[in-house]
Length: 414
Image (cartoon, rainbow, N blue to C red; front, top):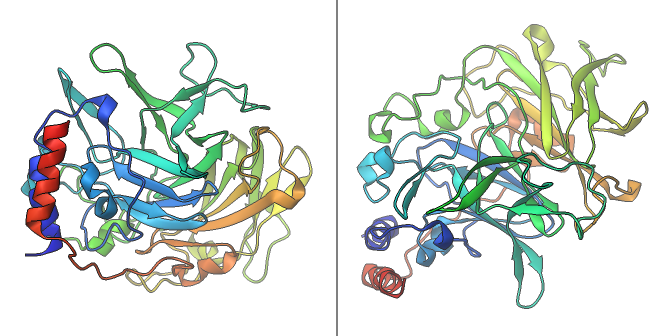
């Protein structure tokens, strides 16, 4: 019997009870390769928090964290599968859907069910024993909006999120983990409830844009068993089939609006002209712009402005034809290249400034179909993975009876 089968049987026991919002699982162990051969919608998660981070679906059985949570070291990206089930029947594998972004919650009394994009996030703050940061958003009073221009996180008010939402990832298919004070930064409130079930959840940072790919995505509600016309690799790259390339800029650098531009069209070399990529790109947000036709394969740089002067200039991104998708007419077609500007003084209290020595850039492209990222612009070539972890073989080390016993013990104790 396979390890996956064993875990499924154990989960049937552990997940049969009511899930209370105050008892959602927050894993501090996990695996570097969570997606495996899973055929569902996936999102690339990139860690720029400064410590090891963990992400899990909120209903994951705590006994299964080591195999069902994602573990992500700093400056690494990995794929997170969005496991959503028809009628939220998470114990019935036949109800697994293709899925998509966006967290939804439904409760009957204290029994709450969560879609696959509702996640717990824990990032290490260090120490012995280690302490962990969860998601939160700066706020003022009863406002549901994030407070901006935070100059002292030690005195700022944070709305601590019960969990986080993966949403708005169209195009980039990427979310970013960043540190704000002693929390994982969320840029907006995703939803909340009070009364029998009290919770808030925040939106993890991403890069705005539209979703294009070599094959159209199936409906998010389609059962995986019925999605026979698309492979798991195609599903990780799917989108509208219009032919565009996107360039993005994400602001994890300073808690202020910052403008971004990218190089204009040039058949050879880097153009001296610059095009608007995003005006007033907010902190913990990203924006993008697109090109089409023969201009898709032009080399470009991304520029970040602090007022009038250029503050940071990326390396030259030169699209190349991808080996991970069907034939492209032009290099860069269906790709989404992003430069993430961030501050590696992770524990800073003033979010509005970052010393020159701490200003860094991280390069991310949409999955193709593996994670695609790096610390230099060279990661754009062919859309290949840079610095990503290999996919280790997973061998069962415990018996099904032991897993079931652990699950039963959790059921009884809780």
